[in-house]
Amino acid sequence: MVRLPAGLSQAEERQWVHRMVTRLTERERAERLNARRGLQATAERLNEKYFGGRLRWDSIRFVANQRDRFGSCTPEDGTIRISHRVAEYPAWVREYVVMHELAHLEVPSHSPRFWRLVDRYPLAERARGFLIAKGWED
Image (cartoon, rainbow, N blue to C red):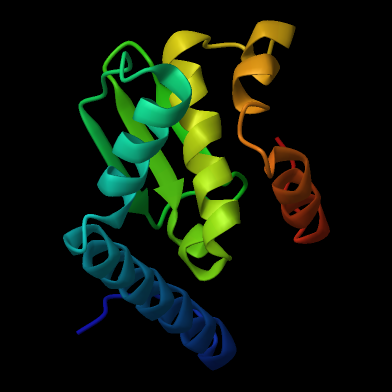
């Protein structure tokens, strides 16, 4: 059952129901992706290879509520969130997004030092181009 505000037209009701069903579906998909633990394994591998294993995070997971960015990191509590839409992209793009967010654990800003860390990933420039072509920017 879906409760809607009174006074909506049928078109508005259909639009609202579609939006809510889409959000539920996206959340369920993010939960299924997280159950696979692929992001955790990717982060651990990249941490070892490019950061010498020194980074620590509390959680890394796909989320369905990031519409305008491909990922985010809160260094203070070690939380990394990756848009569920990134799961559809090639592995090298997903790895770049994880690399980008891992680098924020060490450098919170987008300073030159931050970009030097991210650019250790050999396909960083190519992945940025891919994301720009998809309409996403850093």
